[in-house]
Amino acid sequence: MHCEPINAPIDILCNFIAPRRIGRVLHPARVVPIKFYWSNREYVVREIIKAMTLHPRPGVKELNFAIRSDSSDVFHIAYNSKQDSWTLKSVTMEG
Image 1 (cartoon, rainbow, N blue to C red):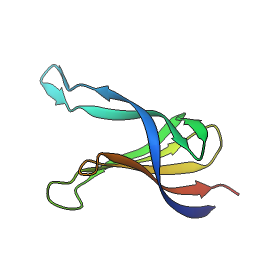
Image 2 (cartoon, rainbow, N blue to C red):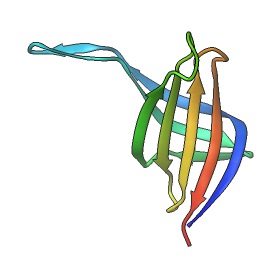
Image 3 (cartoon, rainbow, N blue to C red):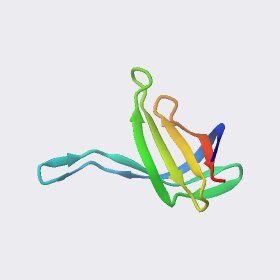
């Protein structure tokens, strides 16, 4: 495995799932990446491996995802609420 830092802006298509109550449990709103565009190519999200929310600074929320597309590579993407932008942080390549 080899992790390649990228730190490039990307365009992304997401589903925004509204908060909902099931019984007594309130499930928070969620962002679910569907596909993203990087380097003139479309990558369809086949699997979300990990999703995290970070608060790196007061007033800033960062959503981080580790996702897999059609290949075995893992893409690390992040949304920054203050800048309202998505970034491809890195790619971990198999083999």
